[in-house]
Image 1 (cartoon, rainbow, N blue to C red):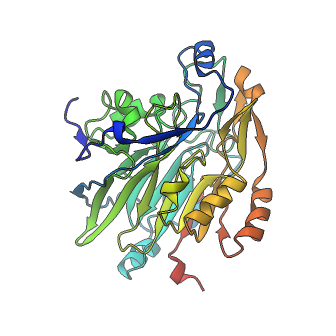
Image 2 (cartoon, helix red, strand yellow):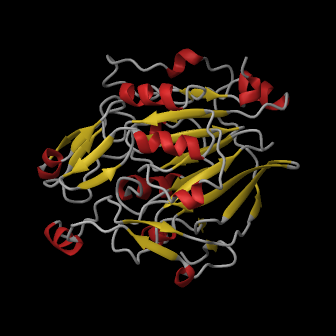
Image 3 (cartoon, one colour):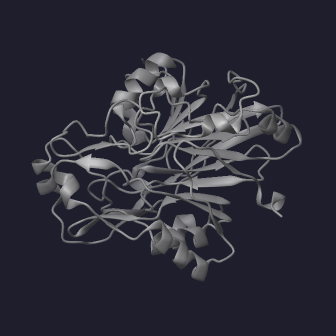
Length: 373
């Protein structure tokens, strides 16, 4: 497939100012011992200056969900282990439609465990870093093999409506999960994909409508006349040597600019860039995941700092390490902190910010701050 949409005004990485933070860790030794796997760790944080470019495309929101579906359809039962799980988002109900008609922007966020999400932004359906086919094993199950704890049987067939856009933050298997993406490309052959350029070699053989965004570049999706959702890439972690291109985070802005969301699944960010941004909702890991001498995923104080830099109104904590894992690597990884300890720090540092803890499989509605009493 050769008909790919590149973001206009490509950005040269030669102009990026990459500042490596020194630490005593031998990347090549780890990469050799782990064969072909690249583990999700951050070797440096980049200070990237990019020029914005914009793409605009017309989109008509899908409406294939069953009218009148109730919130009870979204509840997950621990006893339905063999039943088809319809826990997620059969709720494109009249409340959402009437809210949009009344001019109220709203994010409906459904956590699918790990790094996976399903977002509804005023009718635009975004599937984020999905793992919906098999386990997460990086192709080396003896080293690491992880399964979801709650949505164990949730699969692509349980997505009850048309997916409008696939969002990929990183090029590694815990974000760009090939077992899932192969089947997803068959089910939705014309699916729009927005992704980090690092995933190009993986996505080009599967999808024909891919937009690769460098940090600072944006893509605009029109959902109605004079109304659009804007997705802008930000700099995420560098997963390799310091000269490697960073992975992505994203800022998603609602059609009327009343609500914005920031997402980066490692809680790794460039402070110089982030402090220039603003996001009402911050989705971030809050529990650290550590290897000896190495932070895989940050959180706790860094997550609080991120919320402060972005002037957030809501923080949605994700527990992307809370999986049933086995293998050699799983015995080396340890967690630091809890959601409760994060909330305690937040109550001291940012008492005005609401922490909205998601339940896997249940939509979490986040209205604009001015709509709160």
